[in-house]
Length: 103
Image 1 (spheres, rainbow, N blue to C red):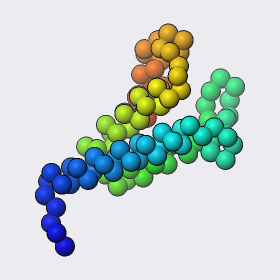
Image 2: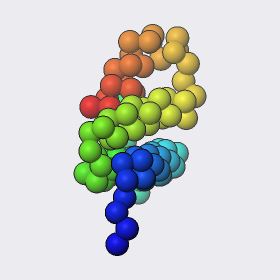
Image 3: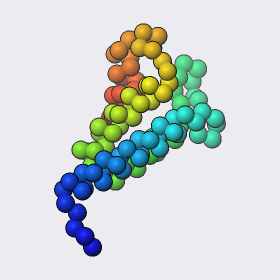
């Protein structure tokens, strides 16, 4: 077996995190009932978006999983198409998307 250098490990981890974020973004686009269950009128749902992120956090260390989850929060905000003003300000976007997925 070939021993991986530190650079090769970093590239492998970066690519793996990117694949998991892309898979979670695809799952975020699926809105029908097997993939998403809406619980409340004003928001809140159970969906399978977190599954790839949980697997990524389990496989990679915190150095890669936290930034990747933050990136997914930004990607999901961009996918939804909400504007910051219509959503309730920058604080609401930070709390509901970026911080929620990052933590």
